[in-house]
Length: 391
Figure 1 (cartoon, one colour):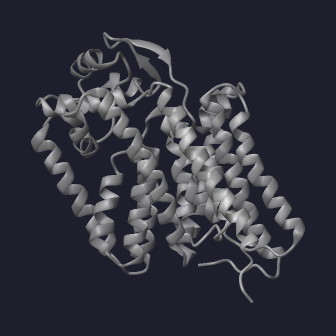
Figure 2 (cartoon, helix red, strand yellow):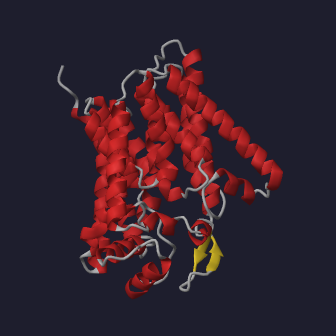
Figure 3 (cartoon, helix red, strand yellow):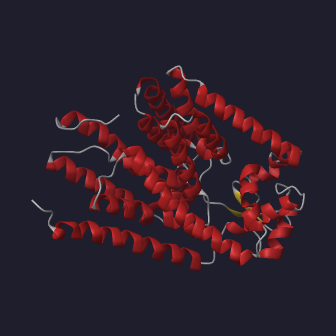
């Protein structure tokens, strides 16, 4: 029997909707004027001129000459090096290229995830999920001109290299990912430990060697960068914005458990106890997963979820890596209608989390709702006899 062309209409329509919506959102983000690219641009220009971008006085002078005032610079030096080609261009051209790069990286990251998880299934379901995560994660990251999409892309390259047993390549990607360790260190450590427990030390060795070489090069080029980065004023910059002179200006709103608790007036000892309970529980689940799981995707998905749940510093534009976790949480074929509708409702709650509250701290609800989808994934496996958890 020949395929009915009409049966492909929903698939094609969903694909066109996702692509059109993505391009529209990317344009709206760019037209908004940008936020953080000026810091990357200025840091790279300071480095090209032989300076230290972690010295706020040098960085601020460069930012003022370009666009205005922003925050101190924290990313490790190899990210700065990667921005150097853009820093050689006029600012507006460089900013436009950075936006185009981020749009392209988002599409490539999703295509890479398709090879890693083989989910969502082909057709309108896949394009609908791509549209969901584009609205959830990509739009915010594009709007802030941030690096969350780059992190997801590098992570997918790492996982694909591991899948092909290209250990050295995976180690290089992991080392590059460590430019933002508050987001990436725990997932990378979990993955490497998982391989070590399988008596495969090669990914860990490759990652360690690559990181050592990058650090050595950074100290040769800018000997005092780490000392400058760890000064007390830089640590205060995680909680406050700086003015032109380097003084504290405005409180920064972050997307962490403690910031989320604070918006509901939970602080002090109670907040510490709640954080400790979440950290112990999350790390316990992660540890059990690393020791017992046979699935690299499962280890990565849970490690990412725990990392965002307990990290002391993150903002919502860092969240694109949770795309992998959300896809993993939806990667089983349910047979019972009640379970299907329950999962649909939980995914709707993930989207609804965007509309709760007025500051970026409320976006921690996204972590909570994705955790709920993940928990449902494993609970459904025990109640739906036709569900087989993929490895």
